[in-house]
Image 1 (cartoon, one colour):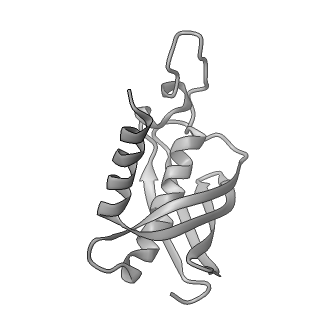
Image 2: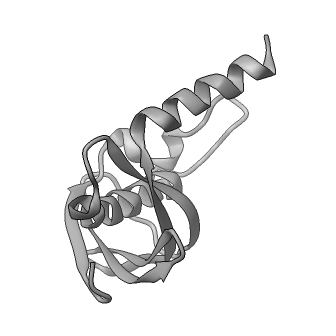
Length: 135
């Protein structure tokens, strides 16, 4: 992948994407705008799609780091455009700048790092960690 390569897509904010839906109990109260956690997920998707040509059979890319600033709210029903730009490799990691825009302008920006892993190995590793932790 060449430095400066870009991947982007658009997405319409759904009710399930709102910060108000993140609440896990009645004590939690969040606004009815695009949740930062969902927005970061969209950023990950843009970078992961850009990495697809690098993957061999059985491999996936996974997020290993985010440094994001979310500075503008986006309501349900609005479309956001997510852009990932490849910056450079960092050893076995891939560094991206990521940005999200809605029709009013830039919503968020930051850095995101991904790694290539064997899909089966990561799920087996997760199961093994839980087995070792016991019940």
